[in-house]
Image 1 (cartoon, rainbow, N blue to C red):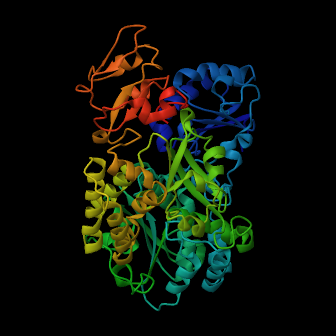
Image 2 (cartoon, rainbow, N blue to C red):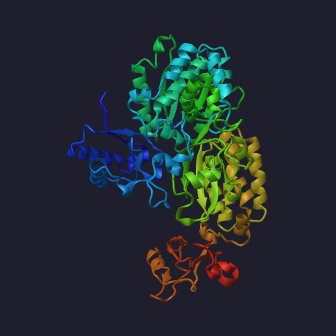
Image 3 (spheres, rainbow, N blue to C red):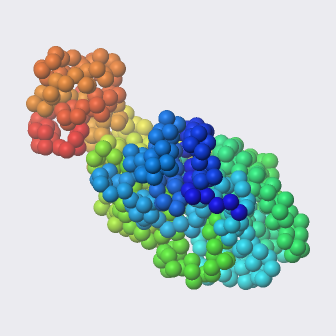
Length: 622
């Protein structure tokens, strides 16, 4: 086997590819050849490393060096410095903002240091398009063990004892679901994978399917043996072309090597696997709707019981697990239930993958032990808020989740603790919001999404979410009434209690949590016609504080409607008749001189804003 002095692993996930990693690859190949380093340096591709905000990224082994934000133009200098002169190219090394002197190894960078990789154990290390690299990392050993050494009961016991709960959102015990299906007598059963992932801002499952498709397939083989299924489907949305491509390549390679199909590994066990492309309907993330979709019908949930374990796809016993759940199975079978329980809590064992997005410095994919405080994820792994802004809330659980305020940031991330806040862990979307966010507008945004995605089958969801959305729209347009807050709460609880499936049962969460933790913003919108964040245009007036204005002209040049006037060294003014309330001036000003007042305000701004108007705020209209 050929040995190299350096191994370079370039990210080829969707984010990095979009950022130009293929141009970086070509430049690296050319420069390595030009310098005569082909025998010293091996360049390979891997999928998402997790640090999406820093891509394209390049890992150098065994140096444990992590280069970020690469361009093809950087490569000649990088190769010359690192691989010819043998000194680090410091300009592109990832480090924390406050770190100016020391150059940390990858494992010492907080973004990586607080993570524990089980689902993402192969991220940034293997080429997803080469099955040999997965096998070299213990791939398919767990499947071989399950097929040759374990009975159905043995497999189910290990998974049950591990405490693994479904990572798709509901958190139902995986082993228990498998046990239900295994006990149903049927000539045909189905093992299914949910790779639909419809939450805005979520990309956990996509990244796993792109980076490590064999881990999903291996989990499905083991699950199929446990329940007695010989056919399976991976349901993936068509908007994930790279994931679909790599999954199909993985299925073909596994089949060719005797790891899928007939008589797997000579054990007599058959398991045929296909990919089914979804059309992007959010409701098809619900298991019964997903099964109807595979059948070629309109994706609509059906009442339960009977549950899919008894009557699922084509009315046959079926088990549906999501991508992250299945990717956990192989290491549990190899290492045992006790090993898995070394992380997490008693009721929420193991790790959870989150897509950390929004107003944090480090946006990306993170895997952390269950029970870790929210604050650690946001301020240590995420490196805190961008541009020095103040934290306001974090949306957990996608559009059906809830908004958690700063006062609850020390809460441990477990299924029980997060539900107690009114939010849900969901599939793992985590959107961080700063003080420029209007929480009424946030609730309206998520409600608009779920109302549009309702399949319309049941009245509480079809009609109830629309009524909620109409009320929120009125509030953001200055038409809100005092009684609207009570109506939102009462109707939200009714929709949760009476909807047919999880979409309707969780859709009111953003409304109820923002009312619970940010009620003052609803009151301000309704009583004072004032959106203090300046997001709701009908409830906003922008005003320049002449005492703070430096007359730098930045806001004047940025204003798209030419509503700002003023000469150099003379405080500027906003012509309200021309202002379109776009917030551009507010976001451009570096001196906190632009303030947000109620719609049509004509009184004394200093009296309204108090100490804020005297420049005591840190930035903007805080």
